[in-house]
Length: 217
Image (cartoon, rainbow, N blue to C red; front, top):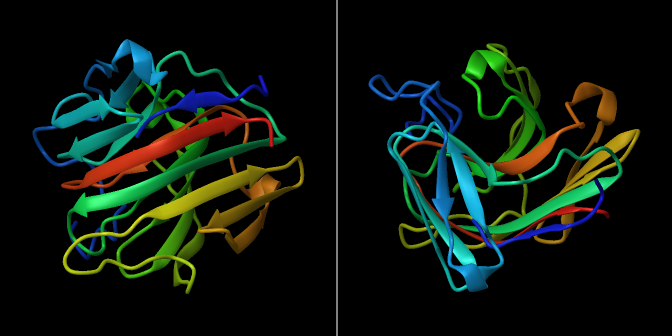
C-alpha cells in the first residue's frame, strides 16, 4: 500500500478553478483509460469525466487538455493510508489565470458520478495562490481558501511556469509543499486521507504533468 506508483503524467474568475462540469459534459460519463507507450512506465491514466478530455503521454510526461474540470489517476493505482506522499511537477501551457490545478489524495469513488466521490485536493493557479479543499459527494468544504504564497510560480507571458507540488500525508497532520516550501499544515481529521491519489484540473486548460509519484514518504 505504501509502495510508490511511479507515473509519468501527467476558467472563469467566478469559478476560481473549482467549477461544476459544463452543460453537455455529464459528470457521470464513463471514465476513459488513456494508453501510454510501453517504455514510459505508465500503463494508462483514467479520467472522469471521459467526454471532453484528452491525455497524451510521451517521453515521461503527460499533456492533459480539459473541457470540463477533470479528475485523473493512474490506472491500477491502489488506495493509500498514512503515512504517504503525493507529488508531481505541473506546468500550465494554456488556460485562464484563475483556473486551478493540482494534486488529489484520499480519493474514493473517483470513477463514479460526483455524488459518489470523496477526496481531498491541493490546487494552485496562475496568480500564485493555492487552495485546499475536500469533496464529499455534493459538498465541497473549503479547508484553506485561495491564498497567495511567494513560493508558487505565477503565470508569465500568458502561460504558466512549472510548480512542484507535494502533499505529505501523516496520521495526524497533512503538510502542503510548493517548490520546496511549506505553504500550509492541516490536521488530518479535516481531510479525506485514505484512498487513491491523482490529479485535478479545472476546465479549458492544457497542463503538462511530470514526475507523478505516490507512496511511502
